[in-house]
Image (tube, rainbow, N blue to C red; front, side, top):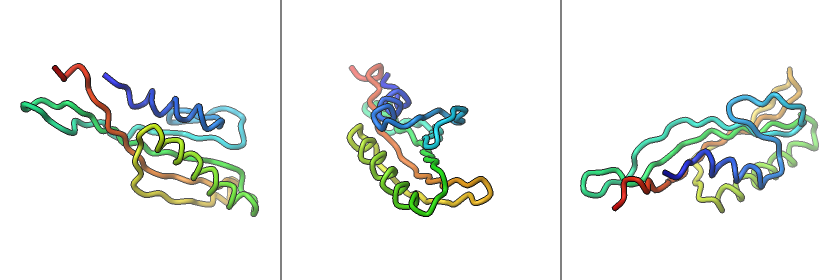
Length: 121
Protein backbone atom coordinates (compact mmCIF):
# COMPACT_ATOMS: atom_id res chain seq x y z
CA UNK A 1 0.00 0.00 0.00
CA UNK A 2 1.26 3.48 -0.83
CA UNK A 3 1.53 5.54 2.38
CA UNK A 4 0.13 9.06 1.93
CA UNK A 5 1.96 10.28 5.06
CA UNK A 6 5.29 9.11 3.62
CA UNK A 7 4.57 11.02 0.40
CA UNK A 8 3.68 14.15 2.37
CA UNK A 9 6.81 13.88 4.53
CA UNK A 10 9.03 13.50 1.48
CA UNK A 11 7.45 16.64 0.00
CA UNK A 12 7.89 18.55 3.28
CA UNK A 13 11.58 17.62 3.34
CA UNK A 14 11.88 19.33 -0.03
CA UNK A 15 10.55 22.63 1.42
CA UNK A 16 13.64 23.01 3.60
CA UNK A 17 11.43 23.92 6.57
CA UNK A 18 11.31 22.18 9.91
CA UNK A 19 8.19 20.02 10.16
CA UNK A 20 6.42 17.57 12.45
CA UNK A 21 3.30 15.48 12.64
CA UNK A 22 0.66 17.00 14.96
CA UNK A 23 3.01 19.01 17.26
CA UNK A 24 6.35 20.72 16.66
CA UNK A 25 8.69 20.85 19.64
CA UNK A 26 11.82 22.22 17.97
CA UNK A 27 13.37 25.69 17.96
CA UNK A 28 12.95 26.76 14.31
CA UNK A 29 11.26 30.13 13.81
CA UNK A 30 9.41 28.88 10.70
CA UNK A 31 7.92 25.41 10.61
CA UNK A 32 5.12 23.18 9.32
CA UNK A 33 2.82 20.86 11.27
CA UNK A 34 0.56 18.39 9.52
CA UNK A 35 -2.45 16.48 10.77
CA UNK A 36 -3.96 13.51 8.95
CA UNK A 37 -7.70 14.09 9.01
CA UNK A 38 -9.16 11.09 7.25
CA UNK A 39 -8.24 8.18 5.04
CA UNK A 40 -11.02 6.53 3.12
CA UNK A 41 -11.60 4.16 0.22
CA UNK A 42 -12.26 6.09 -2.96
CA UNK A 43 -12.76 4.17 -6.17
CA UNK A 44 -13.92 0.63 -6.74
CA UNK A 45 -13.48 -2.19 -9.26
CA UNK A 46 -15.46 -5.41 -9.00
CA UNK A 47 -16.91 -4.10 -5.72
CA UNK A 48 -13.44 -3.82 -4.19
CA UNK A 49 -11.81 -0.51 -3.29
CA UNK A 50 -8.68 0.10 -5.36
CA UNK A 51 -7.77 3.67 -4.36
CA UNK A 52 -7.60 5.58 -1.10
CA UNK A 53 -8.00 9.28 -0.53
CA UNK A 54 -6.26 10.89 2.43
CA UNK A 55 -7.04 14.37 3.75
CA UNK A 56 -4.56 16.54 5.65
CA UNK A 57 -4.45 19.86 7.44
CA UNK A 58 -1.18 21.71 6.84
CA UNK A 59 -0.21 24.43 9.35
CA UNK A 60 2.59 26.88 8.60
CA UNK A 61 3.91 29.04 11.45
CA UNK A 62 6.26 32.02 11.24
CA UNK A 63 7.05 35.08 13.41
CA UNK A 64 4.56 37.94 13.30
CA UNK A 65 6.30 41.00 11.88
CA UNK A 66 4.86 43.40 9.29
CA UNK A 67 7.21 42.23 6.52
CA UNK A 68 6.47 38.56 7.24
CA UNK A 69 2.91 38.82 5.92
CA UNK A 70 4.17 38.63 2.33
CA UNK A 71 6.93 36.21 3.31
CA UNK A 72 4.36 33.85 4.81
CA UNK A 73 2.15 34.02 1.71
CA UNK A 74 5.16 33.24 -0.47
CA UNK A 75 6.14 30.35 1.82
CA UNK A 76 2.63 28.90 1.58
CA UNK A 77 2.74 29.21 -2.23
CA UNK A 78 6.08 27.39 -2.24
CA UNK A 79 4.77 24.60 0.00
CA UNK A 80 1.67 24.17 -2.18
CA UNK A 81 3.75 24.13 -5.37
CA UNK A 82 5.90 21.31 -3.99
CA UNK A 83 2.88 19.36 -2.73
CA UNK A 84 1.20 19.70 -6.15
CA UNK A 85 4.24 18.08 -7.76
CA UNK A 86 3.73 15.12 -5.42
CA UNK A 87 0.06 14.77 -6.43
CA UNK A 88 -1.80 16.74 -3.74
CA UNK A 89 -4.93 18.80 -4.39
CA UNK A 90 -6.14 21.70 -2.26
CA UNK A 91 -9.49 22.76 -0.90
CA UNK A 92 -9.42 25.90 1.21
CA UNK A 93 -7.24 27.69 3.67
CA UNK A 94 -6.76 30.78 5.78
CA UNK A 95 -4.15 32.90 7.54
CA UNK A 96 -4.41 34.06 11.13
CA UNK A 97 -2.47 36.45 13.28
CA UNK A 98 -1.79 35.17 16.75
CA UNK A 99 -0.95 38.55 18.29
CA UNK A 100 -0.64 37.30 21.88
CA UNK A 101 1.97 34.75 20.83
CA UNK A 102 3.56 36.92 18.08
CA UNK A 103 2.96 34.31 15.38
CA UNK A 104 1.39 34.23 11.96
CA UNK A 105 -0.43 30.95 11.33
CA UNK A 106 -1.49 29.80 7.86
CA UNK A 107 -3.60 26.69 7.54
CA UNK A 108 -4.80 24.90 4.43
CA UNK A 109 -6.39 21.58 3.60
CA UNK A 110 -5.16 19.14 1.00
CA UNK A 111 -5.73 15.58 -0.12
CA UNK A 112 -4.05 12.91 -2.18
CA UNK A 113 -5.39 9.90 -4.02
CA UNK A 114 -3.20 6.82 -3.72
CA UNK A 115 -3.52 3.40 -5.28
CA UNK A 116 -3.78 0.42 -3.02
CA UNK A 117 -1.66 -2.11 -4.89
CA UNK A 118 -2.68 -4.92 -2.50
CA UNK A 119 -6.24 -4.70 -3.82
CA UNK A 120 -5.35 -4.76 -7.52
CA UNK A 121 -4.91 -7.93 -9.57
